Length: 481
Image (cartoon, rainbow, N blue to C red; front, side, top):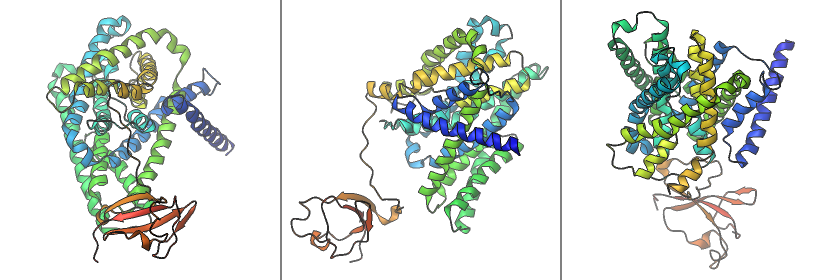
């Protein structure tokens, strides 16, 4: 009992400090996830002295967190926004990852003598672990920095990062199996390719099936509160992951597909509140995952690996990632060279690659701890170099813009079918013909739904006396009079 209380006290203190420190870091332009990772290192064995070295537990927690992060990302993915870039996103998340792995693995095999001694498959394994852009990092940095990008780049980057983690994970698992199973390669590459295809096909099929099954269920079962609906949908995500894995498919891909279908096809009441729920849950999972992975790090063991990690990281950032992006997007004429250049720079690493690096450690592969440390260092380089410069790169390439202020609805969820909402601030000129709401002589089809005056919310009526700086929530739609 005392141990549990001490653990709870320590965990709450870490979370509390991490959030406060991330606020300071954001003012300096540092991604919050990098702050969480560094804090875990500070309190770890080589820092304050908190020892945590259970890789199996860390992998389980990380996989659990990744499940929630990807599922939440799928729910927020909009068909309308991603439809123009869905082909580009799919090509980047499959062929792009494969090209990155092949180029990086070959570079490691040629330049890293101590790793190449173990064989080319070990080099490809290290590359596969780092083959994806981390979804948690990309989502966090894009939204934290409030980047508004031209040429549909935001949905493209979020779609790619959400769907290429499963590809990198599949390649990692297959390469670990090759290195741990004798005579597997004697059967040729065809069985390996077949396993990869089955993983993708089964994952997509299970995701579609359970996504539409959930849509059907939600149309017939209503709950009195969005919290129960949110928990039900979250349970579907875990169930989808498990079913796909049992059928030898990719569980992460399946739950991501299911979440996209639920978020776009199901009629979700209070959807905005549900997404807020999942957003908070996602932040908690990201924070927990980065802190735990930081605790696993041993800076004293990483020092001899700084140079090779830096070389591999720079090769991925400046050669492998750009080459894969330019090659994969070559058939698509809609994206400018500037846009492709920016996409190539958003090759952010994060908790995903570090989590995947635990797979060879848990499998007991030779020098797997060395691979883990290299991946950890490359993740730090990526978050520092790429994560802190995304905004500047977007401005340099003239791809970012200032977004128009969103309409303030003060927490009200307005169905799109009712019309368009506008937030109007009353000016002295509006009151020139009279100070009441009736004196505004609003056209047919326009209704004032609410008036906010300072901290008061007022129900509007025709004889209400308006004042300058009052906020009017106006609904513009069809009228029956």
